[in-house]
Length: 255
Image (cartoon, rainbow, N blue to C red; front, side, top):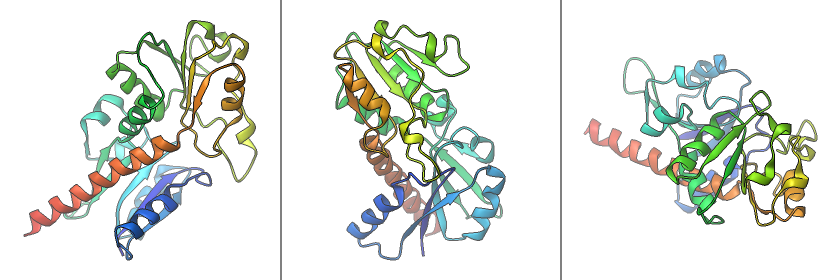
């Protein structure tokens, strides 16, 4: 049975299995499956690959998007620039298993952001410093949008920002994400929300819950808000296209 999966930790928030299983049904791929592999450390990755010989590729999410790179043998252009991956193809055609890293977050984020954004006269703040934030910065550079990155340990940090100087805010942290083990969906970053300008855009990469506490708070200050569900769909579609192309290329190479 051909198998795809998602590697990260925790994974209780993920919609990826239902999304891909619906896609398999639509395409008549009844023998395909998608599974979650919640591993807190990538030291368990070789074990996952060895124990699932039908695993063709896997998506990567928090906290492994950057840490996965030393395990990979090749990188797409976007991965080389960003330094983070969210899709890995498994090549089992050699004596040693080879992993090939891709990043479709950049595709998903750009398509989703463009649905709500007039890029003119935008000044952006990216919240977070991980792999998702690196993808956001990549897209902002493509769109020529000036930006600054904020994190808990950066200078300035979250609480030191004068948000009135910006009109585009992008949350690339897991703050607000649903957790089956806790109530993180009620969390917010320590920002001065009273300085938010009317008509600002707040893009939250979190998609579960549908509206986080930060989205509600930003909206109450007059911001236009959007969650990460469309981004998830766009990046998943792009990942599926890469997987299909890889399968076709491998078939051609074996003919």
